Length: 452
Ligand code: SUG
Image 1: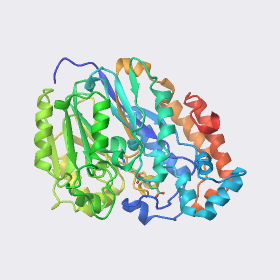
Image 2 (image 1 turned 90 degrees about the vertical axis):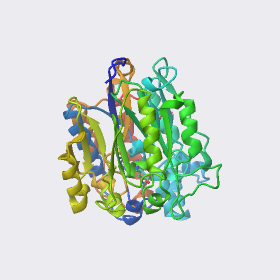
Image 3 (image 1 turned 60 degrees about the vertical axis):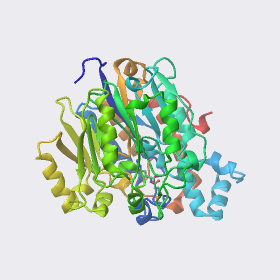
Image 4 (image 1 turned 135 degrees about the vertical axis):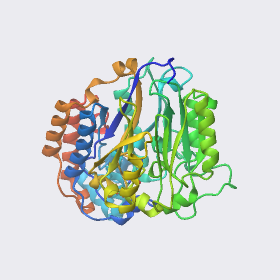
């Protein structure tokens, strides 16, 4: 480990599933979202499962933050679409126009904070500040409406100034489609050491010759990834771009984090994750050599785990956390224990003598049924001691905050919701009351439209 680095921690900021968590089949190319479309959801259980994961990891000594749900149904979007009158009239007219339209404006999808932003920590940037770009999420209408409030929330957590630099979302066009940290991985000898930033994209907008998926959409473009790297002031020799294997996007890997996760010097991935996997590993090795770090590449062979098992079990959508003793902890969804091939692979992995030494399985079934595993629910933010001191202290989870949030969920959330319920104006009122109280608990200030 090189000596010339500051002390830093990796904080995981989990999104809290919101009171309108539903299964609306909104994400074409996300097989879980399609498979569970229109089945009833349990928003209270979704939020409790998310909080239980946060509590577990905070209890293990990992720095855990919490990010709030967004206001849903989002009446300002519905009004911008031309629906007028009282909230009840707007909701009813939107429902009649198309239930899917109302469902898109009511989705609790902001819970998947791996898509909230791309974050480049201080040791990687030219000006030594932590840079954030909220993702524009233009590929899906229900997600594109997240960016504005995400930007406000991130500013309320990381005050702009000499520690934190906020960029606006990229221009809202498919050529610059940006899905945030789900397609971004940071590798480094230690959290506080200079690192390598690894961007994975699904297609190029200005090079029609490059193979693209044929069945499902590639949400992230090279142009978006390159723009984020430029704005964040990343060092080119320590930045690697890779094209995702289009066949895997067509099999349901709608983000790179469905087939790959990395932490410290370890990259854990499906063997065919990239269009040119040997080339990607070479580029990562060279870039890591520039910061005196080494790559441990753990490729899971198709002969051990089929693509379908990988995607159904969400083996790779796990969190890879660096323990104080240098070992890595893999936080997997419970579904990974239920697939015999995946379960056997993980057992072998833990006894192989490699860097991944421990596995924890967590029940996130409510989120998983929409294609969101442990890794989707969290945004990683490497914070130096000075950054940590400058961040909003009220969003870091300890037992007291966890208990307060659990009680808040129990007070405000329903335990059953179908998309038919989304037109109930009472649900919109309940949501605003809950979020108003939450901004007080997390000391965020007025981040929602209804508070402006
Ligand atoms: O964007 N699902 C999300 C899941 C996001 C997972 N994030 C990461 N892989 N990092 C999506 O596809 C489904 C909502 C619905 O169908 O109701 C949804 O938006």
